[in-house]
Length: 146
Image (cartoon, rainbow, N blue to C red):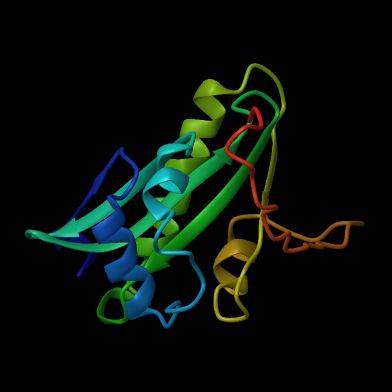
């Protein structure tokens, strides 16, 4: 199936992102009202197509210099196990190597199912522990700056 796919160098649209994300069970993983703005803040990305259907996506966020984070790498179930995820990850890694002026730190969070893919591409926890926190927005007064 991977021979029938094309990987484009661009960030997924909000509609493509939602379709692919929901196909892998990420129904509640995103705030759909803000996803377009989130995608616009990406450093770069890839979208895989089979014919006229978006079947995979991945993007990179970060400072574009030293720190890069792989975000939202996903392949619809019909194309999982074909090597498409690895191809997209490799393309993102190549792009990071092209833009980083020095050795880059590339981080990510993985689902249990995706851990093998990342390990096969030399990602490891090393001596670090990945942590995260969700922070709710404060209400903003219309008279405040920012």
